[in-house]
Amino acid sequence: MRIIPAIDIIEGKCVRLTKGDYSTKKIYNENPLEVAKQFESAGIEYLHLVDLDGAKAQRIINYKVLEQIASKTSLKIDFGGGLRANEDLHIAFNSGAKQITGGSIAVNDAKTFEGWIEKYGGTKIILGADCLDEKIAISGWQKKSHLNVIPFIKEYQKKHVQYVICTDISKDGMLEGPSIELYKKIINECSNSDGQSIKLIASGGVTSINDLNQLEDLGCEAVIIGKALYEGEISLRDLETHF
Picture 1: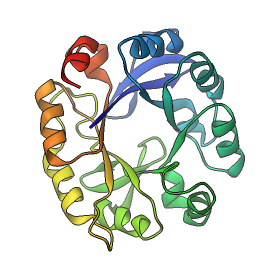
Picture 2: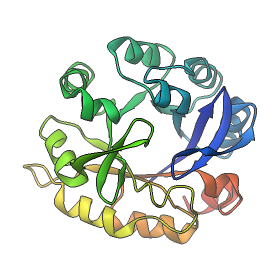
Picture 3: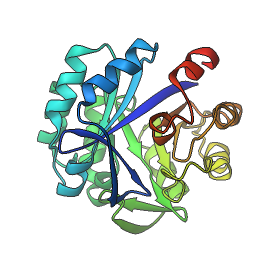
Picture 4: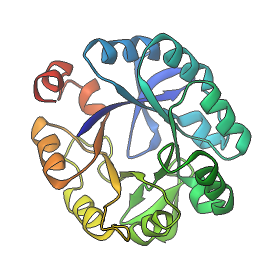
């Protein structure tokens, strides 16, 4: 199972929110590159980079941070937040993203998102399926849609999406453990015609090495860790030892 630390960006700074609420913003470092280099030094290979300003503004904003991290580390970055137009996508890939995550656009403009999958392939375009009470949330989690998470994922599986990031928003930043039952359900129910399940990237609530072990046993392809790293609940040394 891949371990993917998260860096969330507001005004060029490394922050964390609780349950996606912008009013709970806590700044952990003024320099995201410094944080990324610490991850790299600990043997981490992947990074989940989120443009929270972009998510709110509905266009890419913090691409300079992406560019800096991509050019000054060897981390493989998946980038999300505010990607709505083809131009946003070009900027993200040209700035060094290896993958991008589309959430709101997959709900609001399925035609464009499907075009991205066709053009770049199901490995470079990750489906963002963040939810609250199993309903997909959009616009930086500010709005809840009417779409149920499992049918939503299944629909995009038919269009050859391979990777899905799913955050249970009620767990995000709470340090109370991940949404094991939800992930179990997704893995069990979202298989393609060959019986291959979706590559599920779990996110939200991870607090301990035990949580990581449970997610690995469940069959998650990867897990994103945010606040637990920043608050010292899980150390980079722990990750080096166990993963």
